[in-house]
Amino acid sequence: MTAEFLWINIPLMALFFALWVGVPMWMIFKRPDRAPQQTRTVPAYLHDHAPAGMPAQREASAPEAAEQRELVEAGR
Image (cartoon, rainbow, N blue to C red):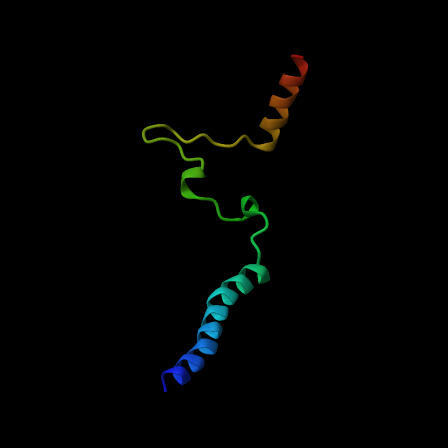
């Protein structure tokens, strides 16, 4: 009787172990994370925020940016 339970449990253990290992591996191979640095989400600590008490810097408009480039190129 004990030997019968042993031989019944061995295939069940093999099936359980195969599922335990196989499902996560299948998920990894199905959708690999090839380039995590190119994801669209950015952690909050990497955002450009002005420190408390400091005014936020605004981006230069297109004409101002062109004028700044001309000044920099003229000063070579």
